[in-house]
Amino acid sequence: MNKLTIFTLSIASALFTVNAYAEDVSKKNDDAMAALISKAPEDAKAYFIDPVDGAEVEKNFTVRFGLSGMGVSPAGLEKDKTGHHHLLINLEEMPDLSKPLPANDNLKHFGGGQTEVELTLEPGTHTLQLLLGNHLHIPHDKPVMSEKITITVKE
Image (cartoon, rainbow, N blue to C red; front, side, top):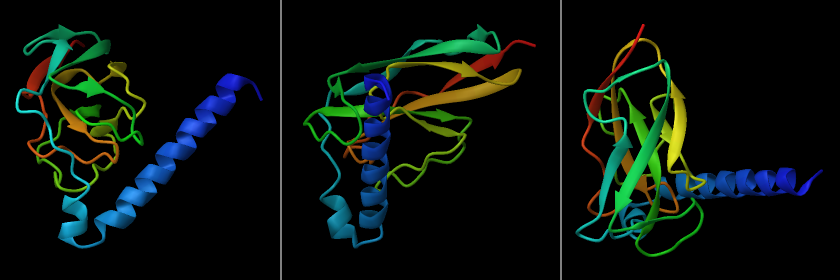
């Protein structure tokens, strides 16, 4: 195995451990969960750099995440005033913001600290929204989220 493979496997293992721990803790009482929620600075904001609300995009396009008032750090690394992005795609109802965010087709995790992604969506109208999570994928006290934007994917 080369160094990149070992590094990638280490990150995957760490994220699995963090997610398993967060899920286990989320089954405990509300007080225990409240202790795991990180505070966000009052001026913290998540936003889209690209695309912008109302944009018309190709089927494959780049989404660039913006964040001000905080820093980006990977899941599993507990550090004040930081978090990592989650991309909500066509999500009509917000998940429970007091628990670790689930990962599925409509809620993408960027636990490696990524600030952009190449996305492929079917033609039509879609909504996108960013939501920051702490080291355990739990949204902050005063959730840091972008406005929901609407884009159109060309035929």
